[in-house]
Length: 72
Image 1 (tube, rainbow, N blue to C red):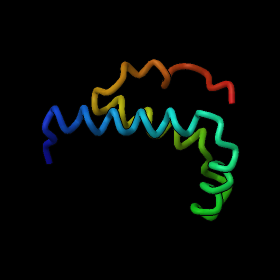
Image 2: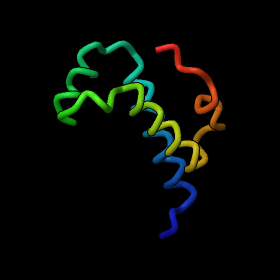
Image 3: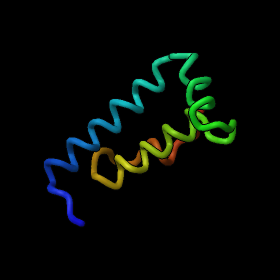
């Protein structure tokens, strides 16, 4: 499957928007994600990392956040 460049850019922007929203300090988001997933093994830190990797693969960022230590 191929993805049009404009569509890939828009999808990457959406992923970055979601990632930024998840890091904006909503304390109840992690609890909500845990309840939704049904396990404590997948948290917002991991979800942010997954969103960063996907956005990077779409060309939406330079991957810098993938190679930095996450302080949280």
